[in-house]
Structure formats: structure tokens, C-alpha cells
Length: 485
Image (cartoon, rainbow, N blue to C red):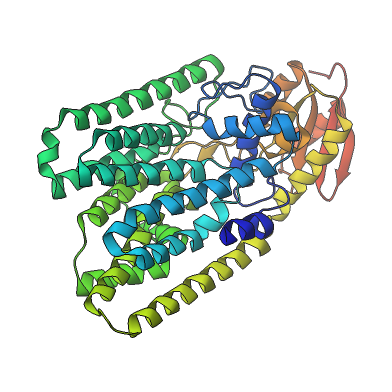
């Protein structure tokens, strides 16, 4: 409860567009806003950068934005409901983790493992962001806890409860299917006789079928609109690596470093080292490690450089700490020092939380992001509802390192201005595209400073457009009713 109060009171940002991962937060809130204004349909979400079409987008199942939309229908168009839902979801995940750890290591080690889970950099950021990872992780952790209980007592209710929660987690983020790998490894290592259970295989198959159907519906959305977050459809911003990337040591080391910094932390790494030197890894830890690595490898294009893809690594990190402390306590039974060590570890974790909380509060947005948000806010007061706009994105259209299309459709300006339209990438001349969009009805063009060096575009804008804003933050151009060809 203290942690939730701190997260909501201190870590929650004033606005999401200029926040950490504001790109993703803006897309999520836009989907929720559209749900609130229209029908709530998690299988058919709509974004703002789809031009003059429906805005339908290939994505995961939008369970989290649907819950936000229910709140927005009561609160109006505000951002705090999604932030509060994320915070409560992460707290629920922590409770589920302690529920799983306590029978194995005791209440104090389990509680300290849960505290590490709450103090990690990802916990502080994702639990105060409008992103689905926190809710997905809550379902993931409770699914794990239920599956462990099934292995302990063999009752099918726990198995099917676990399957339902895993299906829900995978609906929000298909990478959560790594828990199926965790479960298989766990059963194969510690309860092999259960592999003969038809119920176990049927539960796994049911989750895979449900996820496959959801991904297929998302693919149909892409075929209908051409819009995608890069889920499974070819020609989109896919996260999957090729063989060359899987064998690239620099990429793999970068992914490992991100896990260490953002989710495992040095505390979890130290606990793992203690286990390796003084004890041995348990089946649960081996399985969780395999699952976390699988999730990182399947999304290696982004997990090698983006923090939130490492959310699954927070679970084995907490497990390592609980194991290390639980094993130490059992070997030092009756020693007064064990209580002192627990207090010392708690103090370290509180200090870690305080340092990361300070980092969360103090990090400002880049100047160009601030310029983009400022221009969009001003455009929202100038344009009429329903006006179509073209935004020069801050993202590039082609990823040179990975040699594939990049998701350049920056949603932040569309979200702040509450308008729809088209995005142009930042890495190529786009005069022909812009002319086409104007012919399709675009009324305004927005570009944040520093402006792209494109003389032909600048000359054409001067001929056919009227500057509405032209200052240090960038430009907003209004197009004349019938611009010259």
C-alpha cells in the first residue's frame, strides 16, 4: 500500500506524450480514447495515424485499453486511470510472486523478493505508465503461481486457472507464451510423470489455439487497413531476429546488459552468484531463466535496445533473492545475524527504490519531443475537429542496422492534438507523399525543430501553404483549399 501510494503520488507523470516511452503510451491512450467514444472492441482497435481510413490496426488484444475506456466514460478524457490501473496491476503481480515464493523459502525471503520486484527500474516506470505490460505481468505471475500450486497438489482447478490467466497474458503480449516454455521445462525437470497427463497438454494447446486465433484476427486487421504495430504480418515492423542477429555477440551482450540494468539489477545478479557458489539452482529458476531468455531472443531486434522488453526478467530476479536468503536462513538457523541480514537487505532494496524513483521523476523529455508536443497542443487549439493532418515523425522509416521496415508512425502529435492523419518518416524526402496526402484532404502539416533539410519540400510549402506557426519549436502549415500540383 505504501508503494502504491508513492507510485501514484510521486512517480506518475503529469503527461504521457513527453514521458518515458511516450510513443507507446500515446498509442495505448489513443486506442482507449477511441473505445471510450465508440464501441469497446479489444479485437479491433483504432489508432490515429491511419490517414483518412478506419484507423484499424494489427495489434495484440487490447484488454488494458478497454479497461481504461470504461474509466474514461466516467472521468472524461484524462490520463490518470491508465496509470492507476498499471500501478495496481504491478502490485497485484508482486502479491502473486510472494504467494509463489513463501511456501518454498519462507515469508521473510519471499517478502524481500517481492520488494526487489517492486524496486526494479522497470517496476517504477512501467507501473506508472499507460502501457499494458503491468497488467500482462500480473496475469503472467498469477498464472505461474497457480501452475506451481497445481504441481504441488495435482488439482485440475489450479491448472485451468493457470491456463486462463496465461491465455489472457498472451492476448495482451504474445511473448508471455514463454511461460508455456517455463512450465514445460519445470515439469520435465521436476515432475516428469505429469507429462503423461492429457489435461496438461490440452491446457497448453488451448492457450496456443486462443493466441493463434487472436493473432490471425490482428492479421486480418492489417489486411483491411495496412496499419500494424509489427506483430506477425510480413512487410511490417517485425521484432523477430534472423540467424545472423542471433549469432551477433554485440547484440546478445546488449540484450543481457539491458536485463541486468532494468530488471535483474545488481541485487538479483549478486543473489544468483551466491546461489551458484554456495547452493544450486532450483528447477523453477532454471525454467524461469529459459523462459526469460526465449522471450528476449524472439524479440531480439528490440530487446537488445529497449527496456520494457525485459519485463519477464523481473520474476527470476526476485526468485534468486528469495532463494539466496531462504537458503542462508536455513543454514544459519537460530542465529541472530539472520534477522540483521534481512533488515540490511531490506534497507538496500529501499535505497534502490529511492534511487530509481528519483531517476524516474527527474528525467526530462528530449527537446525535439517537447517541441513536438508543444506544436501539437497549439494545433489542437487551431484545427477543427475532424481535420486531417500530416506529421513529420521523429522515427525513421527504415532500420539500417536490421535492414527492414521501421515503425515510424509517431502517434504523440496526433494524440496531443486529438486529430487523425498521416505520418512521414524522418529519414527520407517525402514531397510526393505529402502532396498525395493533401490531395486526400490533409489540412495541416506539422514538423518539430530541428527541421528536416529538404529544400524541395520547403519551397513547395511556401508556395501552397500558409504558416500558422513558425518559431523555435517548429512549423505548422495550413494548406490552401486547392494547392498547386
